[in-house]
Length: 417
Ligand SMILES: Cc1ncc(COP(=O)(O)O)c(C=O)c1O
Image 1 (cartoon, protein in one colour):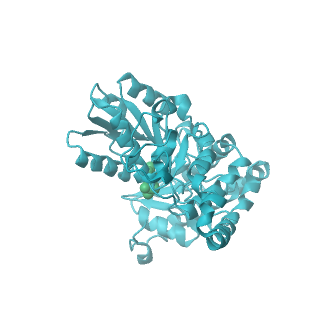
Image 2 (spheres, rainbow, N blue to C red; image 1 turned 90 degrees about the vertical axis):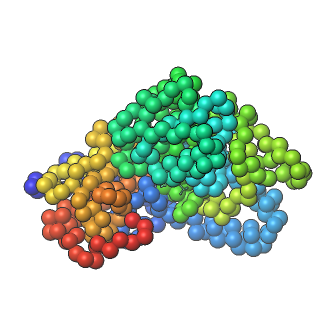
Image 3 (cartoon, rainbow, N blue to C red; image 1 turned 90 degrees about the horizontal axis):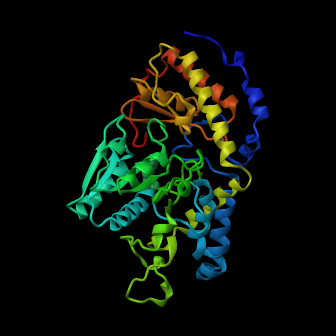
C-alpha cells in the first residue's frame, strides 16, 4: 500500500483552503462539530438563517398575519419568486421556472405535458439505470395510456441509439445518481430533436453543482430537486422549467386551481395561466418554500463557475487520496476519472459497502450507500474544506486497513441507507 500521508501532499490542504474564495461561505452553514458531511448530493446542509426565517414566517406571517399573509407577505408569488432564484443556475430566464411539490410529481406533469405535444408518437426513451422514481413515474403514465412504450437503454449504451420516428420523448437524468456521470445535454437534446422527439431533463444532481444551460442546449422540459445542492431542507419543493417556445401551448395533467389564469374567479372551466405558472397544481408549501428561498440567497454572493472549479479540485483530490491510500483494500472507483464527465460526487464499490459506510458514519464521515455495493461521497463546495477531504481519506484508509467495518454493529440494515 502507498502510505504517502496527506500532509506530504502537494499542494497541501492548508494552502488550498487559504486560497479558496468560497471558504468564508462555510460560516453561513451549521455543520455539527466532528462531522465531515459528504452527503450534500442527497440532503444539503442547513444554513444558519433558515431557522430564523421559518420562525418569522410561523410567528409573524402565519401567527399574526394569518390568512392576510397570502397578500401582505406575498405568499402567493412564492413559487415564481423562488423559481427566479433558481433560473440563473439552470440557464433559464426570469419567469420561466416555478417551484412546488416533489420532483416525482413535477416529472409526471412535464412528461405528460410533453406527450401531449406529440400526439402521433407513443415511445418514451429513457435509461434503465435512471433514478427509480423516474422509471416508476413513466410506468405510471403507461398505466394511464396503454399504447405507451418505454424503451430503456442498457448500461453503457447511448440512449440516443433508441430514438426513432415513434419516439415522443427522451427522458434522462443529467447527472447519474450512482456514478455521478454527466451526460451531454446539448448533444442528446439535439439527437432527440433530429428524431422529432422532445427532451425532458431531470436536474436533481446537476443544479447548484455544475453549470446547466437549458435554453442554450435547446432543451424542452426540466425538473429537479430542491433539497440536494440547493440546500432547501428535507422534502424541499422541486422546480419545473418548460421551454418558452412550448409553455403556452402545453396542457399539464394535474391542472389545479392555482395554475388557473384567475383562481379567485372560481370558474368551473379551467383556463391555464400564461407561462410556467400553469404548472402549479394546488396550494404551495409555504414553509418549505420559505426555507428554500432563504437557502438560495447564498447565490447572490457566489457563482456556479466558482463552485464547479472547487468541486473538480475536491472530487479529484478525494479520488487521488483514496487510490493512493487504499490500494488493495477492496475499493474500485465507480465514477468517471475525467473531471469534465463527473458531477459533484465520487462513488466507490466495495463488497461490504454498507458496513464500510456505517463505520465511516460512526467516525463522523457521513456519506451514503446505494445497493448493492456503492459507497457515495457527495462534495458540496459551499461548506467543505480541503482539510476535511484529506481527513475523510485518512478515516476511510484506517477503517479499511484495520477492517473495523467488520463488526455486527455495522451490518444491520436501516430503512434509509
Ligand atoms: C435523479 C432524481 N430524481 C428524483 C429524485 C426524487 O425526487 P422526490 O423524492 O423529490 O420526488 C431523486 C432523489 O434522490 C433523484 O436522485
